[in-house]
Structure formats: structure tokens, C-alpha cells
Image (tube, rainbow over all chains, first blue to last red):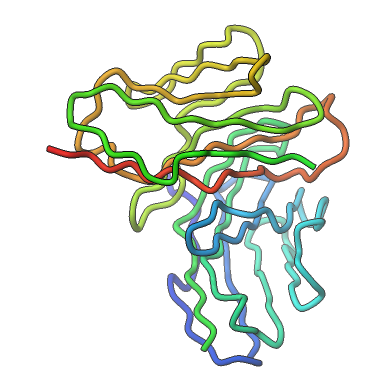
Length: 115
Length: 118
């Protein structure tokens, strides 16, 4: 079956601009996660959705970052007033029901470059 | 706060040789433990995970890992590597029902880059 998909695969933007990154989880998965992976680092947790609600947003670095999942399926990560330090690969993952230890299936990521 | 340490940034192994990748964690209680592999242009793929019970866990692609509570370690092993195993390997921890607090997401190490020599 189809895995987690993310669009676009690459996004280049200028400092100060607004960007949206999209994630399509595996069909039927109620839990969705966003991570950020900087060069040479492991993925860093940003936010976790259970259904439509953000159950844990403790990893969002500041209020320029926001994510939504209005219908409990597709999610959009939104970054306002982008900074060069936001350049990274943004990963999305989904799991069946978000239970602790549930296997998270990752998408290929969106590489964001802020010039 | 929880953390994961992968002390080896790069490891080079000859094809057919055995492999061990090290992982140490710091956590309030025994967490769930995971190993993921990331190949260029591909998403992270789960190799194996440990919840409880038998401390030796078998995974996909011939990998196994051993949980050692006394050493807070979860090292990944493979008896004979193949050229296709060249990739980035990540150890991760996740909260359990009993660990309380902490983020719901996984905490990853910085990864170990595995290079296979012919």
C-alpha cells in the first residue's frame, strides 16, 4: 500500500517568507508526527497529532512554527518569517493509533532551504 | 531529559564482516527502544524495536539488537554485512505508558554512518 508522502520534496525560499509543507499519512493512521532533521543530526520531534488535535506540540521551536490537521488526515506544517536556521529536512511520520511504542512510518521528507 | 548517544559518527566495515553499532540512552525509566535505517533519498525505515521481555531482539534484514539495562545500551549487530547495508543508522527512544512526562515523539541519536568496503 501507499506509504507516507510529503510535498514538495524540495522547497527553496527567501529569508522572511512563509512556507507550507504537506504530509499525507498512511490511510487509516490516526497519529501523525512532524520531525526536523538538520544536517548531520538525528530527527528532532516537533509535534504530534492524534486525530485532528495537536496532542503534543512541545517540540515546536517558537511561535513561527504551526501545524494543522483539520480533517484528521493530511497535515500542513506552516513556518512564518523563515530564517536561515530553519533550513533542514522536515520529516512526517504516521502510526496506526499513537499508542506508546507504536511503529512510526516515515515519509521521504521535504528539504527546506532558506536563502 | 531523555537523550540518546551514538558514539561512532562513522564506521567502516568490510563486506562480509560482522557489525556492531553502539547506542546508549539516558531516560527516567526503561523506554521503548528503536533502530531505524536511512538510505539516501529514502525515508527512515524501522529495523527493530524493544518493548520488554527477551533482551535480544530480531529485526529485518538480518539485524539484531541487545538491550542491556545495567549499561543503558541497545547495540545493533549483524553477523555479516552486505554492500546494500551502507546507510545512516539511528537509535531512538520513546516514552512508555509508565515513563510519564516527556514528549510523545521519539528522541533520536545523531546517527552512525556505515561505510562498506568491498
